[in-house]
Length: 300
Length: 300
Image (tube, rainbow over all chains, first blue to last red; front, side, top):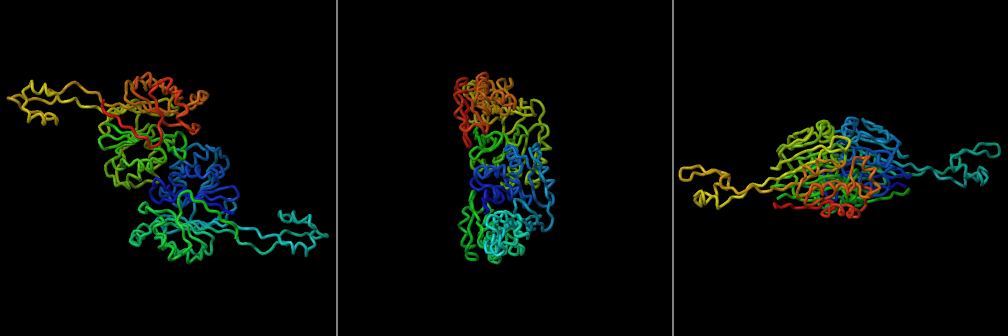
């Protein structure tokens, strides 16, 4: 199970009811943030899913709307008495940006581990297999594929066939081998077929790029930018390296995603739902995010 | 006339309904901010008194709750197409702090003029005579006295006595000299006694210091921190270089201020008004600020 909250859904500048980019992702009681715009720490407080449990922050790029909340978050984690390392991932330049911003957050109660990305990169955090992939935003900018794997299920028929006594099933289920009639039975011997996990793809601040439907193929949820809705913004979208709703929808359609959530709305969009038909005509399972919206993705 | 808005009344950390320190001051259609914590740009938007008209930002000190909103504000001013210089005042170290924070706000449409203060300093902004004065906060920290002077009034009796013809009164009132029967009459020749202006003293993040009642003597409004209310916080107030409500009230009483407004509340204070009696028993004309509270000070 994976819980998400769109803490902030604003692009470029915050608005009274639309904070800057930040997504809270919770897995097994631990959490990470994707982006950390101004106001993120208040969004985390309001959500109530926990501050201290945030183990990582993924920064897509260094435009202020994606990282201006960082010094405040670091201090909020210090106030929450975090002592474990905090991992921050972002494009090359991360060290310089974090060190600049930390001019007002010099003393923390935990070590900050910085990971500068270049090219497509895989790493693990909270048990998630994360793929960072470059986008097309004019400056280095990353999207993120989060994959939560699922263990294969214990298969009672296989256990019976191997004559594993009932009291030993629990040991195998917990991942340990057992001895049966002088033979070792390993957990994988009594497992059913592999099971699909949960996959979320997140990408804002980009023109459409092929890697999005490729890495997001048949994902459970695609979260893409809804920077512009109106067709007449198309030249602006190209100039500013952003997308129209319909372009995001086409990526979700090409990926055969289960659903699409749009976020990161331009301040020129007063009501994000007004342009939803433009997206839904291309990919019906599209919705628009609002600040504080929560979603729970269950294993299929 | 001088208008004020307490954009953010939170100390240390923001809360869902209590943004970090920021005061908006408007005089003659221009504005300045005192402090600029995270969330300030949204507070300015919500207030609706104008973004582009902000000519200066006074930063009391470099704890994040007083300056974490700076990069966002600089970008908001850029989005508002400001071209005139923006003046930022703060303690020594300002250049380093602003340059650190500008790692995410490198390109602006206006020049930033930095003024590093050391010791008590006077300067002028928006026609206000401003005195920056050092506080006692463990690190360099400034309070601010804002004085809006008022011109003396035109005195018709003096004009008549000097035989100034009625059509020339307007010229004198506009500040120009006139010729009457071969003699020059200067504006000051037809002015009444000097008139009292408006004085506001603002100081947060400090132990009580004598300069506060001294510079705030008989001021129209004193705005001081209400970091702690409960008496048992006294040792903490001393340790953290802060004040209790009653200590702030004693400063306003000693200054013979017309009124006192408390702001910059600790996150440990859930309802700032709960401790108001502690302050009012020392200085009855005390009130507590809330985010977005506005005040208009008229000439007496």
